[in-house]
Image (cartoon, rainbow, N blue to C red; front, side, top):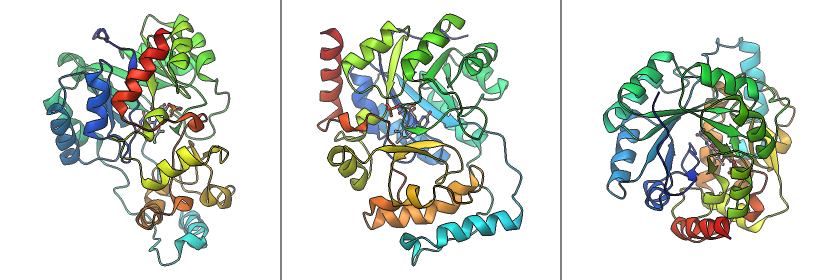
Length: 343
Ligand SMILES: Cc1cc2nc3c(=O)[nH]c(=O)nc-3n(C[C@H](O)[C@H](O)[C@H](O)COP(=O)(O)O)c2cc1C
């Protein structure tokens, strides 16, 4: 086991794969005494190495590298692929976009992605959607890296403790991005963050990091009062200057408080919370391939929408309380969060 290091401030920047995490954003949080994270799920080893090196040039504070772990899926039968393709190709926003059946490899190889981690040795290594192989936890421990895993229910927290991980990220149902539930499919009974922390904290000695809908210092204080050791915030940082979120993403976060969020599997094949848009509405009951095949299938559509600054066909992950997003610098946001926390 590696002991969770004492933090000067109880704020963890959420790992956010797909662009929002930048070296400047991670460094801003780490320099304030919190943890600067990267969601590296979709990154190549070269990108991972470059991001960590660029961040190291900006901070000596604690960093967290985060990956997805999931069971490989069997190739679906061709009828299922054709139905999923047809659903996406029929969308008005897919006009002129080359929508094609996904071809392997559907996802980066975790073993290769971890090579730069073993060299750079960030303080934290975290996993989402399931448990990493035991040898990964052992190797991290041998290098002094503290390992965390997301739990969305008590049973997952028990499994994380039994796997000898060092801490638990308790992700409540308000959270933006992918639901970390270990089994693909609907998350089912998913508690809101404070109730989840109250359910998980007494089960283990491990530190618990609360995640989901935490937007202010008051929210953080309440999560700590429920039994959390620190708070992980994603959506709150999306609209900051240092965030790599797309222009459309920022525009809706700051300017469309009534749009609302939905939990959808139509973008990637696994349930994730994001801003409601034409895609989530039209694909609500469409045929969808399992994760990560649906993610590959929708990649060109999402990329084309981002290039034409079209919010209606991008996956704009956001937590339920996104309407309380604040712009300005991440450094300033951390300062305000800490002032509110102490108030
Ligand atoms: C844009 C975005 C991308 C995310 N990507 C990841 C990820 O790659 N890995 C991960 O463990 N969690 C990911 N999450 C979930 C966060 O870790 C965290 O649970 C969530 O942000 C907490 O809810 P909040 O967004 O309301 O703060 C993502 C969240 C968002 C908003």
